[in-house]
Amino acid sequence: MSSVSVKNYKDDERLYIDLQLTPTLSSASDTSADPISVKFSLNRLKNEELRLAIDRLRLNLSKKQSKKSKRKSKSNPATTKELDDCSEIPIEILHNGEVLELTVRNEKAWVDGAYLKVGEEKIPISYNLPGVNVEKLPSIIIEGCPLFPGVQAEFTTSDCCEFFWKTFDVNDLDKVKQQISREAVNLEGTTKSRSFTPQKDDVGKHVLLACIPKRDTISGKTVAVVSPSVVTEGPKHCPFENRQDHTRDHAEHGCFRALTYNLLADIYSQTEYAQEQLFDYCPPEALNMDYRKHLLLKEIVGYKADLLCFQEVDRHIFNSHLFPALSALRYTGLFKSKPGQSEGCASFIYNNKFRMIASQDIVLSEYVSSDPACADIWAEVCKVQPLREHTQDRSSILQVTIVENLEQPNHYVCLCNTHLYFHPLAGNVRLILAAAALRHIQSVCDAYQQEGKTTAMVFCGDFNSSPFSGVYQLMCSQMVPNDHADWLSGKSQLYSGVYQSMCSQMVPNDLADWLSGKSQLYSCLYQSMFSQMVPNDHADWLSGEKEQVLSTLELFQPKSIISACGVPPYTNFTAGFQGTLDYIFVDSDLLEVTKVVPLPSDEEVRANVAIPSSVFPSDHLALICDLRFS
Image (cartoon, rainbow, N blue to C red):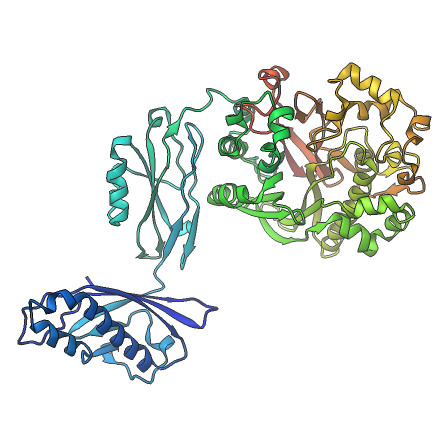
């Protein structure tokens, strides 16, 4: 059957025309020749005359016909005349039954509702037919973990498409693949749904996903993919499922749920150091992101949060896994990578609860060193050259997303998301960057307040800072004096005899392990030294490279801020370190906490030595709370 498909992209100067023609080229008196199907494409300028496109079409048709007829010409002399006739075949475009003038521009000719007439055959022109490209299904599919399609839609949206799922026996794999190649997928026995969660009966079977792109009443070509491997058994029970008993429903009317979670980026978990030392207790297959991403999604979706902030998000995981899945659940997703890196922060907003207004992301080191709002801070930092250089080298970012609460018009949330520099001896750098972040957040909130919008801050992240740090004090006590211990941080100030002897009693005595590797190596001793065991003026704080010590800067911030989830015993738990690094800081003058989702029990976290494990997909724990405007 003949068909003509035309694609007209808004910002492209060309039309893209795909044709499959089965013309009857013989004369009315000669009906012996079999029709010969030909396929080809035309890419024509929109503003050229139709005449040129028709001439090119006639020429291409002649060439295609010639190639396909060469074998027949020896045994059938009539074919030679058929080839001659091909160049004379009438080709026209009809609008409302009338032949279009050849001087009409292509863009006005090849339109919806028009017909291409080749000989005596009238072929309807399919204009901007909806289409999709469906991404491959994951290499690992786990029982009990939801699957969502990854699609790139054309002339439609993924929301308008229909998705069909089913599992089938391994013995039918070749048959299903042949159906796909023939574009004749059998949808019998499928389930129509935007997502699919394999069950116990599906273990050992392949998964088929078929998508029919649609726009209004128009359907495009069905596209299907099959999983490269069969469904595997999942863990019997994950501790986060106990937490989800508290989040079976979305936050009640008038409240909203916030979540922060460091996902443990693939680029960090797959290093030799991570696999052989830092996470040596975790089975390699459970550390693999192809496994972890399924548990992460199952966990995240089950919390039914309205505002989600993630740290250590690999760009490819955002694009191929998080964004497609959460978009299907009516979330708007934003990703901001660290400069020159493939991982960063991601924020998601539930569209049923919030409307996105704007985003104002920054690189913290660039902001503190260049924005007038931080001029006083930077002037002091510049007095200590090594500290200035150390701060400028940092890649920490701040995601700032302004959203409006749909249940309370003119009530805005300034949703902030960050991941501060990890090094255990860089408390001064973290403090400088946190102060810069608060300055930016304050300026954003003030701007919307001046427009009459009630604008409350929700500041989520992995701050790599203990409850005894300067960062936490700045948040919750509004000021940090110039003699705070964090200003004495440097490259080697903590290599003291006191520090090492304390570490040897409380953690593995290989001190080098604390000072290398990933961000979670911020020692619990570093926390306790500042708060209980070593006075601020102890001589050991001044040893080492004194040139990084900053003793002239006091910091203030005007907001009344609380840690919405309090101070749990830990939010990061590995074999070598357990401590609280993650927080949801909120503006307590405008927001109140109505519920905090309990953390897993200590027994659950320690069941497999530490996390990550086969039932915990990250080395961090998610923090979740419900909030409402006061």
